[in-house]
Every structure is written in C-alpha cells, then in structure tokens.
Image 1 (cartoon, rainbow, N blue to C red):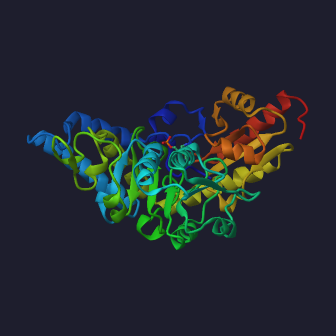
Image 2 (image 1 turned 135 degrees about the vertical axis):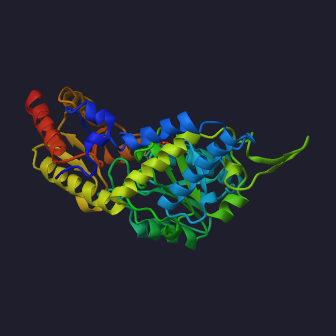
Image 3 (image 1 turned 90 degrees about the vertical axis):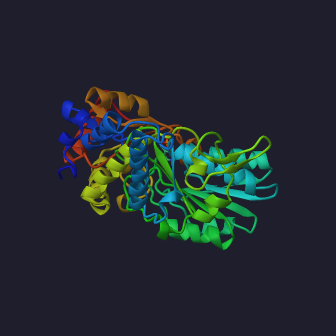
Length: 406
Ligand code: PMP
C-alpha cells in the first residue's frame, strides 16, 4: 500500500526519509502547497483585513473571505457566514459553552457528554454545569468504545439542554453515529454539539445534512497551519447567541453605556484574525479535496486494518476500542506491562513517532482501567512501510523488556 499523497510533497518528511510519523491525530505534517500559500499571503497580500480603505488591505480582506468560503464548502456549509474562524476546536467549543451555555443553561437543567470525550469537549461543559447549577451527566460508552443509542436515549429528558460528543474519538478512533445522536438530542429539544477535531481531517463532512447544530474542527490536524480552526453552526443559533470575545470588529455601535453587535461572522471574530492561518487552511482543504475525502477514508481504513491485524498477532498487545471497520485512522494499544512512555521512547530510537499518555481524555482512561495508552495514528502520507516499522518496533521493545506479563 503506497501513500495517498507522496511524502515528497511534505518538506519535513522529504528531508527526513527515515522518519515514520504516526502522530497525525495530535497534529498533521504540512504539504508544500500550504506553506507556499501562507508565504504568498505574507509576501504579496499582507495587511490587516477589514481595517484599511487602501487597496492592499482590500486584497487581504478578499483572501480572508475567500478562505472562509473555501472552508465552508469543504465542510458542506452553504451559508459561509456561519463558519467562524477560531484558534481551533478547543476555542470553538469554549465559545459555544461560554456564550450559548451561559445564556441558556440554568439550575436544574442537564448537560450530557459521553465518557470518551477529549477534555476540550468535557471540561467546558462540566464547568458550565457547575457554574449554572446544572447537572453534568456522562453517557457511558460500551466495552468496545462505541456509544449505545438506547443508553443515550435513556439518559435524555426535557431538562437536557446540550448533548456534546466527538465525531471520531481521538483515543479509540470510534466513529459516532452523528445523525442518530443529533436526532435524539433534538427530540428532547437539546443542542447537538459535535467535536469534529478527528472527523473533518479524515471523513467527508456535510454539516448542513448531518443534523448537528454545532461542528468544531482544528486546521492543524487537517494539513493546515496551527492556530486556526473553525466553528460551524446554524445561523439562527449564532444570531441568538451572545458574543464570546469582545473588542474590535465584532461591534456595530459602541455607545458610552451599551454596544450592539456586528453581523455574522464578525460578531464572533473579535480582534485581528489569523488571516494567514485561514489562507493556509483553505490551501489544505484544496489538497484534501484534490485526492478526495472518500479516498482519504479508504486509505486510512486500509492502513488501520492492516495495523490492527499486525498488532493483534503480537503476543501481549491489547488494542482498545472497536474493530478496524468502526474506527478512523487511530489505534490505541498497550503492550503487556510495558509503560506506553517507555514504548514510545524505544520506538523513537527507531524514528517511529507515536503518542503515549492519557491523550487529554482522563475520564476515558479511567473507564478503560488504564493510566495511559500508546497511540498510532495514520494519515495521507503514511504507507505500508510505516505499519511494518510500527509492528517491528513493538516486537523489538518487547524483546528489550524481556518477558512481558499479559
Ligand atoms: N477534540 C479532539 C477529539 C481532539 O483530538 C483534539 C486535539 N487532540 C481536540 C478536541 C482539541 O483540539 P485543539 O487542541 O486543536 O484545539
């Protein structure tokens, strides 16, 4: 199995042929096209968008707006003004919990998340519930890491105001039944919030058809720059929701005793935006659509299925989560009593980069009964040789540690 996009397109990978990069769920490598787009913006069209009446600022504004339209079409959002640029998924989710949550969640209400959430889609809701006197409820996941719709249904009531869940788990790779979960939330009148940090980079997202009210994603995990992300949300929701950050650009009029707000998307983009990041993200989605998201999914599925088989065959390896067909390109595992950090260190001596730790999901680690796992994650530049290197590294680590208690 060859890579979907050749590593020669990624300057860092091209310069380090020995490197086996298996940490794309943390952040992806950047193709030359993205680096060139960012550089081109700074070299040719750089000024503060929306600020000046001069031609250069108009050019910067035009590129920033074009980036929004490009990203909106990639995510299947017809109304591009409903795509808000943020720093990333974390900021997007905090925006909704902070602005919508404070205005709509009250004492006696309930806020529901799953037991598999990243801290970015757990802590803001937990803290909102604590602040508002609401009840924070956790929908337990099944032993294979999936969400059972009957269990979720049983947890919901007319008091439920929010159901927040990941499109794809960053630890288990589990792909959520998004449409069904959104429908259950809507049946009780709750907001359906989808954390798409691991969804948008790997699966075809059609926001307008998915049924969720909110979808958040991070550019840096989908070939784009760090420090740019998106919040896509329904227009009525954004219009009713108070602003989150206040300052320049997001106002209409500022009187001495009150202010009024700008139209979408500006109402939620206070201050100087990360226009270069947005331009880079637009270039990234061009690259992804150049190969097609169905091909991205098929490529990762083939890699993860092969890795799943290879790792399962190694004595002492335990893979957490569902089978390869129900997951994205993420594989979390433990190897007997070898600490995941030791495993990652040994793999690093063989130039294999994997993540080890709690993956910002301590509640999930407790449910899995482990303090940490090792995680390998695949993307468009990986190929069969990377799976070989991973499996070979694990076998070598086992040998180094002698007998491994299983
Ligand atoms: N949710 C999930 C599922 C993630 O994997 C991540 C990143 N690890 C985040 C949220 C947070 O994304 P960011 O750090 O880019 O804000």
